[in-house]
Amino acid sequence: MADRLRVALVGAGGRIAGDWRRAAQDIPHVAITALVESDPAARARLADEDVAVLADLDELLERDDVDAAIVATPPVTHAARGPRGAS
Ligand SMILES: NC(=O)c1ccc[n+]([C@@H]2O[C@H](COP(=O)([O-])OP(=O)(O)OC[C@H]3O[C@@H](n4cnc5c(N)ncnc54)[C@H](O)[C@@H]3O)[C@@H](O)[C@H]2O)c1
Image (cartoon, rainbow, N blue to C red; front, top):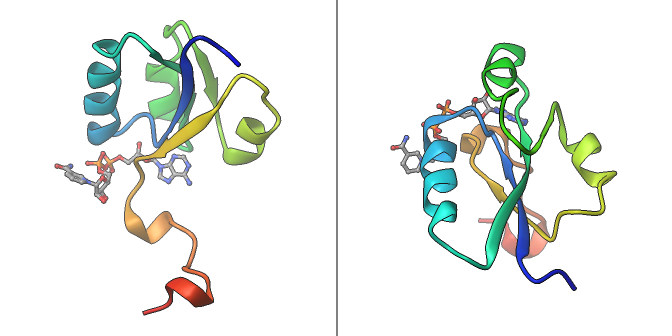
């Protein structure tokens, strides 16, 4: 296992994602290793980052350098709850 928790940030171009990234910088055992952003213009703004910048979750799932993901996209983009979580 890696010495740091390797985290992907989904919705990386958004406001909240920026907060997550700043917070992660202060946690020694956490590293953001991938940024997922569906909007091409927002993705272009992330291009200079020293991590992988990906267009979608399929690209993320192909990687082997991610242990966990933070989903920072609006709720309307999230998968519907399964039967046990239905409300
Ligand atoms: N803004 C706040 O103060 C705040 C506070 C608490 C919680 N939140 C939560 O965080 C969510 C995001 O807020 P925000 O202000 O960062 O929104 P935002 O619209 O600024 O950012 C969302 C980002 O996600 C990207 N995105 C959308 N669908 C995607 C997908 N399928 N794959 C990859 N990227 C995708 C968008 O292109 C955008 O860059 C809110 O909807 C809310 O649920 C926001």
